[in-house]
Length: 219
Image (cartoon, rainbow, N blue to C red; front, side, top):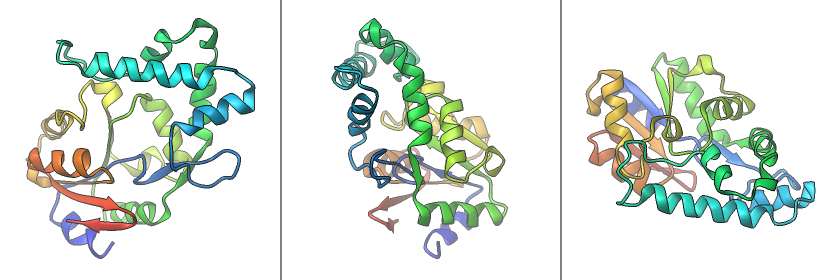
């Protein structure tokens, strides 16, 4: 926090990434951090005895990403959604969508040091937003954040690629946000774990950025 505070103090808004920054998915069998997010689908398959679910789910997500992120896609909305993934999947897995959403909500754990930083910044009165590339919808993400002790009253806005159709990955979500907030890009600092999408692309959009990596912050 001592490293982040000076940068946050100079900014009008502080932006946090969500996954692997303020929260982790957890292994439902051990309760510990899940280092490979794809593994959660195999855990779901095993627990609920839904043979073939994990491979079909991951395969369809991969196909949809290729189609959506392709240069051939001229649509203004360039992000995948959970609904889109399930439309490609074997119809027999359609009832699993709600199960997946509940599984995501139930199986999160806080990244304690960064949640602590979040609450210290919030108590300072600085407006906070969340900025995330994710196929889940806002309702699901809101509930996941609530499960780690962050309520909707604790932040100003949730910017999700699945709602907006622009991503950090392409670098288009950042300009969307500072235009929406009607502030200069240099007046926002973003904190996230991905060196390319959270750090480099934010800086390319003229935001301030801090890279969170293995428990350390890099300017």
